[in-house]
Length: 94
Length: 415
Image: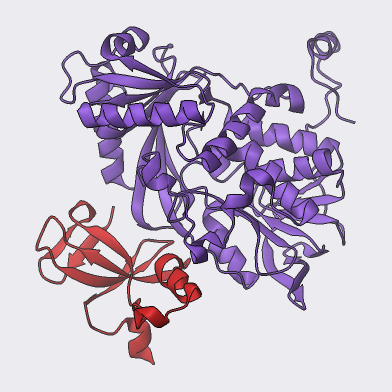
C-alpha cells in the first residue's frame, strides 16, 4: 500500500489516487509528418524500468490535481514528488 | 531413462518399496553450444523446449531459468483454462491451447489434473446480459462451446449464491469445456517430457548479456558461463522488456503486479469457475479445497511480487457479496506475479529486429491458459524462422501498422 504525498493535500492512501503512467512523454508533431515508427513509440513503447520511474499521478478522490512522482518499481519507495511542468529529477541533474 | 507412469508401474513400485523411481527430469549443466536456447523456465518456455524436440526434432536444446522452473507466473496464477475470446485470431489460438490441454496428460504421460468443470460469467444488469449474449454468439461463430442461461439455471448450477444480492444475478454465460489444471504439474510435465527427449533444463542460470554479431544473436552470457546458439527464444513474462533490452530489442510492454489469494481449505463447495466482472470476483476451488481468488492489477508499474491491500479488500468484498457463506473464511496465502501488459491484451509471438532472437510475451493476466499454444508457436518460429499460422497476427509489427487485436475491450479483459 502506497502512502502518496500529494503536493496539495499532504500524505494520503494509494486508493485515493490513479496512476497516469510514465511522465515526460512529449507528443510528436506536426501530426502529418510523424512516421509510423514514431507514433508507435509514442503510443505503445514505454521505458518500463526495473528501478526508478518518473510517473504521473492524479489525486482522483481528493483535489483532482495531477502531479509527478519518482518511484522505485521494485521496492515501491517514493523518492520524490514534484509538480506538473517541473523538470524531472534526471533532467534537473543534467 | 525415465520410467513411464502407469497403473502397472505404480503397482510394481508399490511392491518394490518405491525404490525404482528416477527423478522426473535431469538438472543439467550447461554445454558450450546448442541448436537452440530457450530463456525462461515457466510454462511457455518449457512447452517451447518440448515442442522444439517433439514437433521439429530439435533436441539439442538448452532451457535456462534464472530461478527454478515454474517459480514465476506459472506458479502464481489462478490456473484457469478457457477460450472465451472474441476476435477470430485470438479465439482460434486460445481454442487450440484448450484442445492441447485436453490431451496433455496423455501426451506428456503426466497428470496435469485438467478438470473441465466449466466457467461461468455472470450478468448483473441488462447491459451485462447483452454483452454476454454478444460474447456467446462470437464464441459459437468461432466454433467454441458457449451456453447462455437464465438466473434459475445459474442458481441451480451454482449453490450458495447470494439470494438477495446488491447486484442482481440475471443470468450467466457458461463455457462447459473450460476449467482448471494443476499449474505445477503443467511445468513439471513439460519439463519431464522435454528432458526425456534430450532437452537440458538448466536452473539458477541467469542471462547477463547477449552475444551479438552482425545483427544476429550468437548466444548468451550467463552466470554459469557462455552458451552459444544461433537461435534464442525468450519467454519471461513481466521481465521481457528488461531482458530484451540486453539484446537491444524494445518491446511495447509494461509490467504490473497481479494478485491472487487462496482461502483456508474447506470441503467441496464450488464445482465450477465463476467470474463476475461487476463485483470484481474470479473464484474457483482447488482440489485441495482452497478457494482460489483472483484480483485485478495494481495499475502502476511493479516488479515486486506482492500485491497491495486495496485489491485484497475489493476481491474479498466481491466474493462475500456473491457468496455470503464465505464471509467467515480466512485468507491463507496472498501473492502476486508480474504481468507483461500490452495495449491490446493480445500476445506477441515471433521474430524481432535481432536475427535469430524470438519472443513469446504480452500475455498480460492470461498466460497460463495459453501455455501449450504459446510454446507450440514459439517453437515453430524458432525452428522454421516463420510465424505459425495461428500466431501470424501476433507479431510486433502490429504496433507500428495499427493492426491491433483489441481483446482488451472486445472480450472485456478488465485491465
